[in-house]
Image (tube, rainbow, N blue to C red; front, top):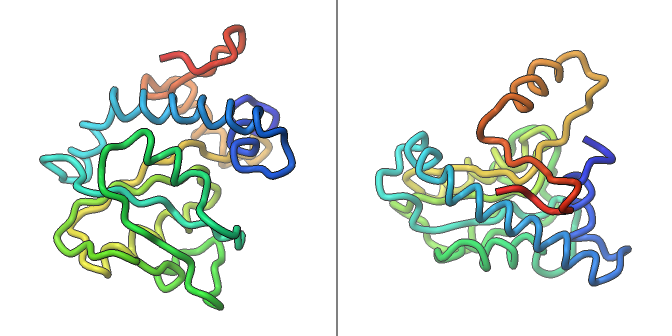
Length: 185
């Protein structure tokens, strides 16, 4: 939620409007969180996706905001996951909305028969991650599992109440330790 540490880190790590040291510190905390989640819950994610041996490649959801150059999440993922990276890009002039549009994503490497882990930094509507997963499947990926670092939630939305209650009580949540200014593992 806006104003909470995770939301701040998700904004800071890729912002060109913050001090480089602050962006690097935010990226470090997110890297630790991703590593801890995959170490503790990766096998459950792979099992749920039907990946008996885990993923054979990883892909990062491309930025729909027209960000020039590599997405900062790509470096964070490369340093956390020892898998070949599938290059993805946004198709020029293809409309990207909050809905699912696999034509929005160009798959730049062969994925036929691969089990692919997709990592996204934030989930607002799910359209970007779902579009990426669909594009990978259309390109021949056998299975796709999606892991998202943070879910943007509007606590004022009545439909969010059930999600917030479940997330608060989830043993899979990786809580922020404000006193230590880091993610508890």
